[in-house]
Image (cartoon, rainbow, N blue to C red; front, side, top):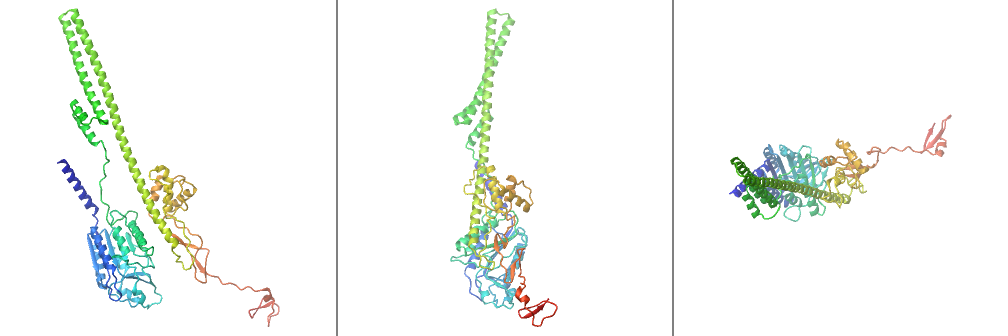
Length: 589
């Protein structure tokens, strides 16, 4: 009966935790446009939209609106209706799969009935990205826009330009998330297109289904895993792009379930409960039962000591009673005038009884001392077990930190390899100068999770300073001059006042809390910062690089006049001055 009650209590606690985990209101709109009327139809958008819809339903979203092959007015109505559903919601997600294009720096998604014969038709026949952002704006905690619309667009190929200055980009252009708590994800970065893949779903949507609704996984990290999978699946040909305006707290589409802490396993828990029951009864018979049930062990020795203590007390009581009886007998005989021999005998018996009482008292004190020593040993054992649990928890935390550092190192190495292989887009053919790997958090290969935290603070702090862009060069195990300069640079840019002479846990915690770059990227003359790299500055013809790092118009050269030309007399010179001829013209001073 008791076990049944415990089961129902645990079940009730689990239900309450589950209800609490999904307390936020979450809504989603999924649009998949495949059957385009004026260009070749697409295959995967409908499949991708179905997979994403099923994903949100599994994640227990309160509202999941799924629409297919929407025309212009149908798409506008769908966005308008979703705005009402997003009002009062904590999380709002809009996913679009289909054709998209960029005109003059503005991104558009294309309904299935669009014709787009001219560049000026996009405002009348396509939906701008800003309109989609507006539909999700009422959500308070997260506004997530996912655009799987970076395919090779046939509209741009046949579109006529009415305004020659308007640009038609390939794919979609990267934008900034200007509104708070906004996250925008593109299937491919600016200027490139996304692959539909050979399977039922595109590589991008397949990775979304895999990572996006993992419980407790921060959305920024989830899209980082999506990026890695897409790069691997496309041979580094397609790289998703994201931009966000989120804060420092983790934001996940599915919160991590609330799991009650697991109590530490005590192998002596059952024996300890039996010991406490015997101690509560407190009789010699109870201790006999305990020793019979548990013949050996720490608690058995303690129980024997308790039993001996009770026996010594019984002996003391009996001896005390016997001494009292002998004294009474001696007094009675003296009062009755008994013979001297009888009085002497009674006095001897009283003396023996008193000695027995004193011996019993001493034995009781000795047994009490033994019990006290055993109790101290018990307390020391419990304290040691608690310390071992604390050490095990610390080792687990260090192991988790090591795994996170390894993941960050692998991701940073992949970014560096890709950046090194990618040609510069600065306008010339010269390769871009790689910047110092200031973002990667590269732990040393021989780092172990069980190293003392105090000894590893300099290395960990240097690793974090390198991640936020304040340290260049290698991470070393000692707190040297380069490390002190890095911490001083962090103080200047983060507004902190840590002592640069030592590596402290407080500094490590604060630097770890920074999610992005803190110290600006410092590029050499002739290079400029572009994201996390330094790229070469290229000036147009007729312009040169100025001392302030910007392109300036090249100054005109003043023609040099040779001495011979200066002394050549003019054909019709003036008197009283020196004249000379230059390029067929005469000049006089």
